[in-house]
Length: 421
Image (cartoon, rainbow, N blue to C red; front, side, top):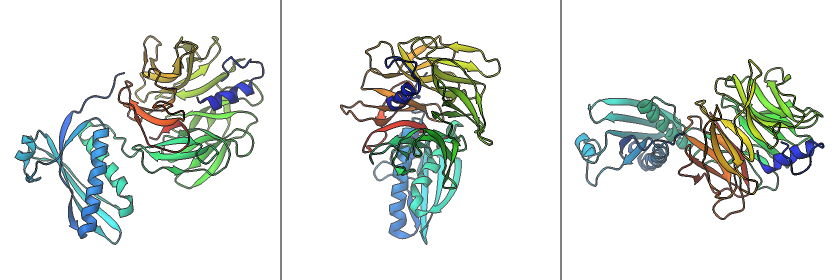
């Protein structure tokens, strides 16, 4: 949870003094050497040729970013259709493509070939408005990942986040690779903590546009918004259930903030906790049977897990301060922001669901907060002030904490990323 949200929680609980909280393994190395041929123009002349080069460039970046592949360019003078030349260059698969452009529409045919057997692993055809050529690149990359790994790719995914470059805190989207930044709200107010629905079409978020911190939902498919909860006091999204029908959130409703479960259809709310202190930042387990959240019931804020069928509660952390848990898609780990000692900066950690194993992922490179898993569980998005900059930027790192990189140079401060399905 960001410091801004923490301040809200502090204000929401007058019984507390200001100094009390209110509130893996890494990706594997490249498994395949993939020969990536230039994409040829079939129809459309220079326009098709330029578009083919653009599609190939983004596709190359997607494949490299997946960590599954090392891409190989054809040797100078080599025939991209020559399997032996590719094998000599070290490739085990080759990918080629043909592009046509006609009346503003792009058609792309790609072939993935197994160089060992000489057989085509797949041949696919894509058709799209030419202006959306990046989405074609992402689709091809995800299809290659799926074909060779059996797992869904993430090249088509997006991050929802909050940014203050306009002077207000508004809701934004950005493609996973740092392109396509676009603003979803223009409320001139304070938006907080976006959370993707598993359907990939809706984003829940908190906004002060009507004065109270209300919970809203942006429908990206229909282009409209609706109120989910406008009860007096805090209404802050935690996370959607795996089936997208329920949302756990923090609500105060004139009392101390606790964890509630919202029915996405009739918008009724059921209390999951009723602690006299403060509970916040809930997140469902991948099977929907448990909820991890932050609670100060043991003193300083710690991560707890609630079993929804038995109401049994267990604590899984014992640091000086823990917050913003996010359950991994595979179910074994919970990533969170925390610190071991009072004067330490906030860093990111993962803990297993038994609380037996904890691992620090970042190590004092600025303030690191707001972790969010990629849908394949191999990467973590977060915000950080590292790099000698005081402003908060979006970063992505491998799930073991290695290879952190800035998502994009975005003006203003960015916070609380949520990774789409």
